[in-house]
Amino acid sequence: MYSQTRKTQIPIRVTLISPSLATPPKTPVLPPAQKPNSDDGGTALLERQTLRTEPPQMYQVVLLNDDYTPMEYVVLVLQEFFNKDYETANQIMMKIHRDGRGVCGIYSKDIAATKVDQVTESALRNGHPLQCVSEPIG
Ligand code: TYC
Image (cartoon, rainbow, N blue to C red; front, side):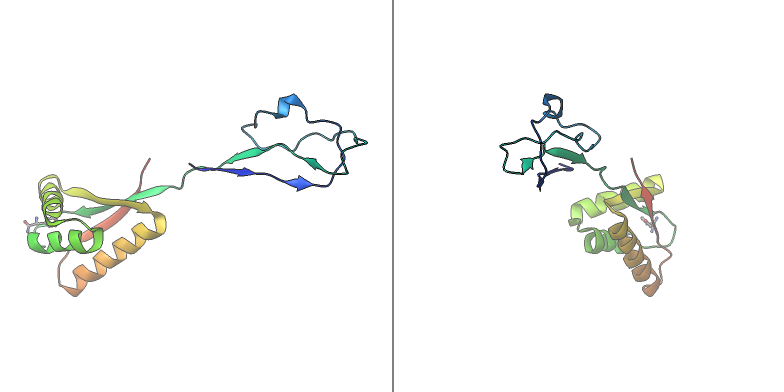
């Protein structure tokens, strides 16, 4: 899923591709220098290399409980900013109310930060002390 395959055509002279290069190495390496071949037309297809990249760090956006924010408002926030249906929003809100906190969604760093900003701005605008934070996971 997080891999790319790169095929490169480079005009160099080689005799043959080493069988040891037939299996892509975990760490990308350049093939060793090869001897020129008299009948390869001056070009050679280098072995495919699979480049593996780490998946991006993800962040969970968490709502915190407080004693003043109305339950109905938290349910609206979960529907509007976290795309939850009413039933799910209500369940998450009740979990936060019971446990003190609850995960609303998992996002890339930028999206998570935007969610926190949107919720915080909305809470302030509506006069509620609702707190929203993001935390790296994994
Ligand atoms: N505890 C709040 C109340 O009783 C409701 C609430 C739920 C507040 C979730 C914040 O993130 C929250 N009105």
